[in-house]
Length: 398
Ligand code: SAH
Image (cartoon, rainbow, N blue to C red; front, top):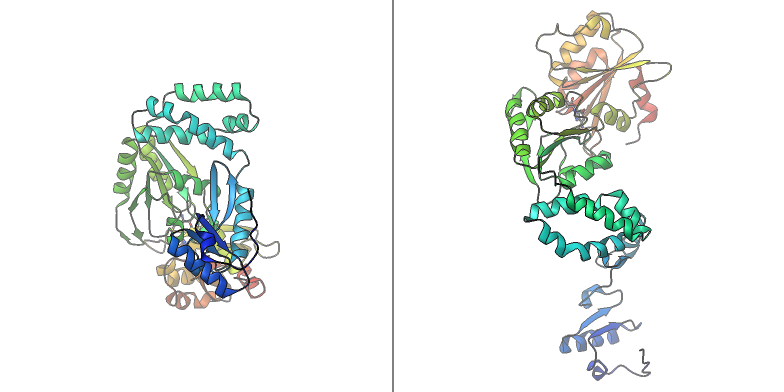
């Protein structure tokens, strides 16, 4: 019921209220309302003046009983609104039905599963079940009940598993949706130095984080030990994410880690990531292939024990782009060998440091300068050699 009382504001109007909203165009009156509310210990919102208010009214996304509230603390209602629109389109309409259904099922699940971790596994299984979601959306209750009974009856997979996830080269926006889902469901995340802080912020809050940082030439945790950590955690029934910079199967030793697991019969899967070559190429405006300049691209390890391991004659051939990973320390050798095998000294080269991150730095020049250029750059850095590098002059945007 709404009662309109016309006239001046008086403090006693608030005596019978439990909530007040001051929305006059007179600051002094608003302040009096706020003070009077304070004195009576009732909540008061002052429109457009969050400092005077004891509660705020955030934008909401209503999937009752599920409710998401967005507030910018009064700093920017437009930003809050944009975020709300984004979330609106992201959260399916039937989410409310799902929540209500889960609420009804709660006590049964509590009885059915003895431990918190079993319950969590069950709920995660239930919430990602597409058939159940569909049936709930269609209000097909017989189907909903059927699927639920099935889910309750089948044994929970208590074996651990390992998911090898590529985190991309740095910019957190380059993580895949699938990678994000995995790091949000993980019990344990094993990661190294190339995984950016921004990505680590997306990891499920109560997951254990194990840092096994590696640097070229200096391995903080030996590979064999990393393999053992993954194995041990999975054998304890944990859902383990092995998070790696770039793509796990490109100079990432992903294969070696999986072999150990394979041996022990631990289930595993792989989520690819954007490799440094793709990321650095895009963010430095250097296309890796081009109809006129490069018909192929080669991803090459620069981690050379002697200068003689690579097929330099092949690498020096025309019309291709070379991308050297881990090549910073060997830049002078790369320069000398390519020239010795016939590549032109004026071949454009670029060295991309911290590609795709806000600290990205690109230095470029000619092949005859590569050794010097590398001295101006710190790891992680990628060396790109080829005619395509010259396109950067026109295409750089980041
Ligand atoms: N699996 C990774 C590569 C790991 S090897 C991937 O697919 O990208 C490590 C090397 O990758 C580094 O020495 C460097 O050459 C390159 N690298 C990784 N991230 C990089 C970045 N953000 N910018 C430049 N080079 C990067």
